[in-house]
Length: 96
Image 1 (cartoon, rainbow, N blue to C red):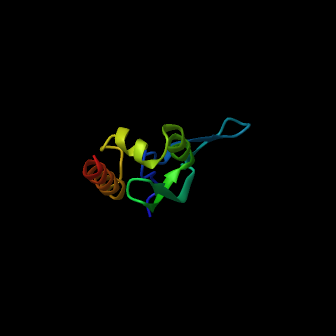
Image 2: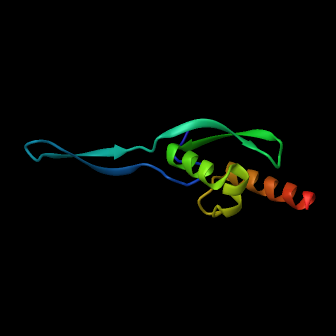
Image 3: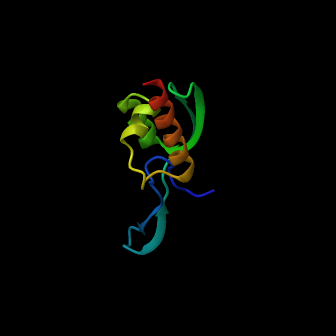
């Protein structure tokens, strides 16, 4: 399983551990990923995703999964999230 957020595309970054003696060794900064089930009001069901804690706060701030997906860039979304975005758009078009 890749260490990449399905909604924001946030992934591992590299840097250095720096000791007191100023020795530098490579290290990785991993994103804070969580397995969550987000509720979609339009689809009427829950959607399981692996997203970062920052993405979870952003989803809450924008007013839920449906509102987040409406504004999300397709290039940042995973294949699974892109499929969900299209399902939501199709369901919203059917309601309107």
